[in-house]
Length: 133
Image 1 (spheres, rainbow, N blue to C red):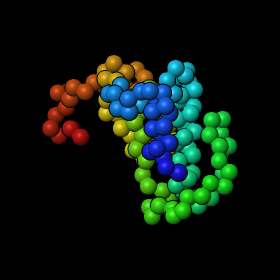
Image 2: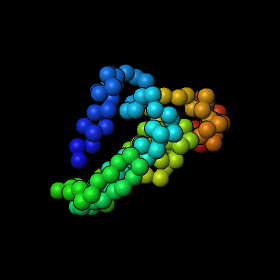
Image 3: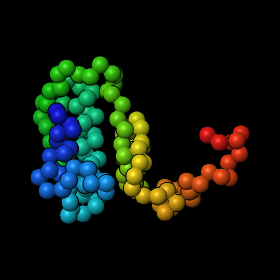
């Protein structure tokens, strides 16, 4: 499955620029809950397709029957997936399905600390040399 092309197609069809600096929104105008649910299914499906030669998936938004991935990736169980996410529902998807998390762009951690479960800011002046990560 050409994942990159599949992800970009809805954006192109909608007339939105591919990279406008505001983040990727493949289903503009759809309720946030639906966009998150679609994204969760897409991540689940891509992970499944990268793990098995023949996959069947029946979700609310995506379906495939006997989809073949030939050849499978060399990396097992699949290549690492990094998920860009902000907000509690998207962060949960990143934690459950991703091997990495990207927070580049979007919200400031100080402004969204309540949703992240942390009150931290990007200011690290309180760290000593010994305690700095």
